[in-house]
Length: 287
Length: 195
Image 1 (cartoon, helix red, strand yellow):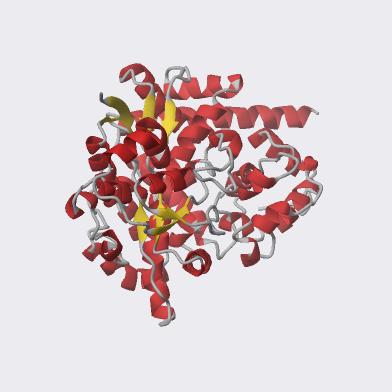
Image 2: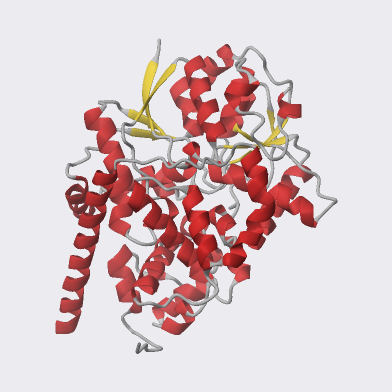
C-alpha cells in the first residue's frame, strides 16, 4: 500500500547536500512512499527572511503549504532540511493568530486552512513509514554500529512550534537507528548548535562548536554521528577537514545522513545514497 | 545621522515588531547559560534583554552579539518567563538594519542580506552566488575557501547551476509583504507622534 507525500527539497538539497536528496528519494521509493515535489517551489526564506522581513518569512512557507493543501490536495509534506522544516512549522504556527493570518493571506493571495502535516526526516521514517514497517524492510541490518544521533537545533526547538515532547533530550531518531540494527548511544551534545550559517562568516566559532560536539561523541565511544539536517552535516563533516589542518592529532569521525543509514539497511547501493560525497570518509562504516 | 544613547521606546518597538514583552525578563540568565555564542561578544542574551528594558541603544547596537545569534532557539526554549528571546534578537536585527546601526566587523549582517537578495532575485537561494558576492565585498574572505572550496568541488558538493523558483510569484509576495510592513510602520510612527 503506497502512501503519497508532497516533497519540499529546499535549496540545500539542490546544492551542497545532493546526497540527502538522493538518499531520501531512494529510501522513500524502497519504502513504498510516493514523493511528489511541490511544483515551482520557492525558497522558505531560511535564516535571512525572519531577521529582515518577518511577514515574508511567515508567508513563504505558508504559500508552499497552501499549494500542498489546495493544488496538490495532499495532507502531508516531507521537508528533510531541518531549517526549512522549522520555517514551515513556524509559518503554520504563526497563522493561527488571526491578524497574522490576514496579512499572510494578502501576501500569498489565498488562505491556508491548516490541513497539512509537516514532517522532517526523522518523522518520515518514524511516523509516515513506522518503526515496525521499517524494521520489516531491513535486509542488511547494521550489527550494532554505535551511533550518536545529532538532532541539532531545529528538529525540536522551539517546542511551542515543533510540539516536541522532550526538546532537550529527544529520542525518536534513536528509535529509527535502533530499528535498522544500530546501537544509539547516550551523549551530551544531542541538541547543541553547530553554528549553522556562521560557517559562511565566522569559521573560528563554528570550528569551536563542532570540535566540542564531536569530542563528546568520540568520548562516548561512537562509530559515527547521524544527522537529519544539511547544514549540520556540512558543518560537522566539512569543518573537520579544516580542523585537521590546525590540529594534526584530530581523530576524524564520519557524519552520516539518517537517510543514508536507512538506505544502506534496506539494501540500497552506494551510488544511490551518495556515500562518496562526504569529506570525511563514511564508506568504511557503511560497508 | 543623529542617534540617541537612550530610548524609552526600544522595548516598545521590539514589542510591536515581534509581540514579545522584554520587561518580563528577571535576569535568571538561563538564556546565556545555554547560548552557543555568548562567549564571543561583549554582550550576551541576558545583558541584551536588560539593555532593551533600559532603552540602552548603544549597548545593543554597537556590540556584535545580535549578529552572532544563530537562531538556535535554546534561549526561547529555556526561558522560565516564556519570552521568545530569539524572536527579540531577530527584531533587533530588523531595527538595526532599518536604523543603519550595523557595526563594523559583523560580516554575518551583510551575508544575511546577500542571502535575502539571492532568493528574492531567483526564487531560490543560490549558494554559489552568496559566496561569490561575499568575496567581491570582502576579498580577504576568499582565503577561507582556498582549502575547503576545491575539496567540496571535487566531491561534487557544489552545484554551480542556477535553479530558479517561481520568480514572478516571489516578486509579488516580496512587494506585498514589504508594502504591508512599511504601511504598519507608518501607522505606528503616526500613533507614537500623537501620544
